[in-house]
Length: 320
Image (tube, rainbow, N blue to C red; front, top):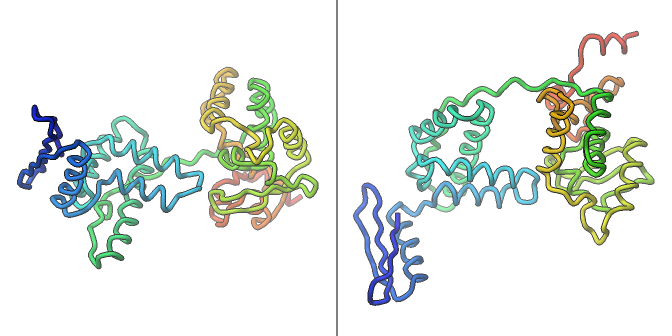
């Protein structure tokens, strides 16, 4: 870790102390040159490997660029690096460091959150290893390879009824109600809805285009109700290629939470659960899995099976 201080002479002295390494010190005419020397010398002393924080942000920028998950992943990297055991260059992070992070995280977070963050660490190490190996022919050990990852939590299978949806919408502002109802009618993700621009809409043909969604670009079929909602949003839009809805993603999630709390509903009423509910409703109509995938945008049938919460009564209705 570098310590930079201004000397009485007006010059800048920098000292570097790294555990297990010799100390290094140098004096420079400006603070900028002292910082540059410190960064260069630290890279030399630590074997030239950047910190996990820097690699994590590079991964988010290069691998997840323009994807809805980029901001979520970047925030997750920042949260991970608040823990001292991960505040190190990549080659100094050990299995014990990651396990220490896991144990600390499980004390204050759910097993699902801890799992997501450990999977993030694993992905960042795997990506860095591939890049490092391509440049040097060498490999680093991935400290997550021998780590026991917490099991995923039980998936939510709550299906929100049309009546419950109507009550939620009445408890929201008009703009939030439109976004939330669209989430149900189209089974679109929050980020996909908030990225929509007028050029993405093809209302005469009853579909819209999702550009660079979580699973790539796709066309989404629209119900008559969805077309009506989008026509109204289009009239109120600012135009000029700007998004139809100028609200923050977190605000939409908060609107659902506040509405359900005001109505006394359980915490299993969530924005993303509307997507599950709509896919389940479509499955109950008797559409086959490939047709359901057109609505949901999934590319894997197994994902559809996780989202469509059918029961024996749904099957009986189709049999009769």
